[in-house]
Image 1 (tube, rainbow, N blue to C red):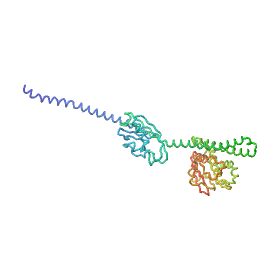
Image 2 (image 1 turned 90 degrees about the vertical axis):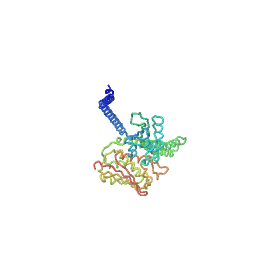
Image 3 (image 1 turned 60 degrees about the vertical axis):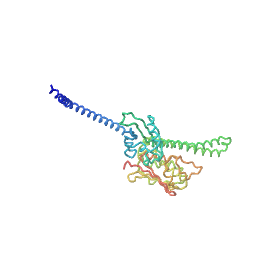
Image 4 (image 1 turned 135 degrees about the vertical axis):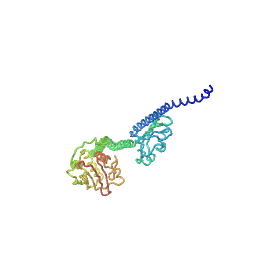
Length: 403
């Protein structure tokens, strides 16, 4: 019995050792199983994250995710490109945007835990892109919203940034166009109304000579209103879908020249001007819309005549193939255009107006804008150069489809 008592501790130890040894493989198997499960969960999480990032990288807008530590934990391709391909991960929003109005939107979202969307117009100096932004005034849409907990690991706020500058500029151009068009139409209509009121007075129609003079002036301004409306419609058609507005057919350019000279015959004769078109290649064929090319040539030659009303003006028209390109030029030996005006001559309603008297009927201010739009719609380019007191030259360059 004493031996049994003495051996009992040893027996108990042996039993525990046996139990431990017998269970160890099971515990190891469980640990291995848990490790494998953990790896599968991590792999699934990474795969889900990659799918999210793949979708987010496909967005054209810049997208940022702000994590719990207040720093960016993700920025899509558009965001990285917008900020010069710099690394944005680990930076705080204020380090990237550096603009108080942007930060106001983000802080409001953080405070209210509600989506905040604002359109922000900034000057170049206040642009979030800093020195990389060189377009003057620029516009942005900033959209900040809280995220659900399972959207992206540790992410709490989503920031979407869209560049609206092109749309903003287009909107401003439309507003300016409407304002300028209203002004241009108001002036001749006011003149017509004034002369009508004079004619309707008791003695307005009794003086036949005066009535004829009034009616002649009214007729000129009526023509001006008609021309403004016609030019506005042309620009509208070109800008609504420039290439789609064209009826492309091959034609000999020399016929276009003859049509324009016939239409301008009275103005050419009244100014005793000379139009030299001896360097227009009679075999030159252009694939384009003949209506718009007639308009282009008409506007350029008429512009030369109206800007230089002196007698004896010489206008030279050339059209030929040079270095596998079609080059068309209209050059006059008039007073020229001051260099400070050259960058703006193709803008709508812009006029140099150096030689118009108060009684002269001015152009619509849309002619050269139509010229540029029509040429660009044909895949070409136009430039202007001038030597004040000597000449002004408009050069059109087109790709030669047969070159």
